[in-house]
Image (cartoon, rainbow, N blue to C red):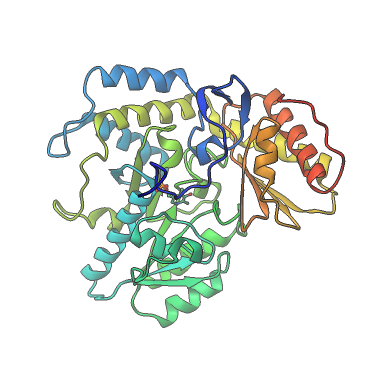
Length: 401
Ligand SMILES: *Cc1c(COP(=O)(O)O)cnc(C)c1O
């Protein structure tokens, strides 16, 4: 018999949070922590944001769920906002990032079949992350995520990230290719930001070979990088966009957006969901989107990201163990020359929440878009000191900020 009531899939730190407020989380002993992780790019509006709390409580008192067998006006309202912001034409709502990507993968395959391609194939990237369902882990470029789950779902060809020429080669030589699925910035892979013209080059290749350009904005979307969607730093439009994490600020919701031919692929019965797009999830999504837009939080993310990274460059930019400090808005990575896995534990002791990705070499910070300048400066000074400690300098044992 198992000795623990939970399945053993997470390495958890020994802290339990009881409540949150803005950029702060409070544990069961009353200690507070500056939350620079946001539940992995989820709580972009911070904890207990009044607009989100209000949307949940008001809608929960009216109608939580009714089924997609009926008209759901709130779903249409959220879709109208998302399509207007994104330049896409329609939306399928799901409950998570993996499910949003499943919808995109199914859409691409069906699009291929409609064009007479019986074994449609999708180009995906090394070091990518697309989720934990069978299709999305098969698309993911990380063996650790796939290990032990073979046989994997077929129909994916992998190329290096930020290498448009590699995509061009596969697109030219493989007549079964129907789509390219890529994160505009790789998050789980270690905050990898491609060349400025990468997406434009992918767009051109997709146009030339009639492929769908499908962007996984599960982590980069909802204002995090300084634009609502990360591709909006460029002037291209993808054919398909998926998003999730920040869209519900912690309430589960995912979305797959499409335009042009991709928007015409699904017919009634082709795809579905019980929970996806229920009135409660959509009421929350509307509150989140409206807050991001009305409070100018995309511009705020851009400014905060600059402030934080300028701070890190001044404090530890020249340190020999810091290989690179990089960011797009509030997607921030500090790449170290050596693995720094224990830094997340040290940071927690100092009252800051962050995590380590990129094979243990990248400190990842995904702070809330509502962070104050003072909190941003505190993040910089605390993490800079930790990095110096990690590199062997003396530890300042002052307690939580
Ligand atoms: C987190 C993430 C996913 C998976 O989202 P879930 O909601 O955990 O299923 C997919 N793609 C990217 C880029 C992500 O960061």
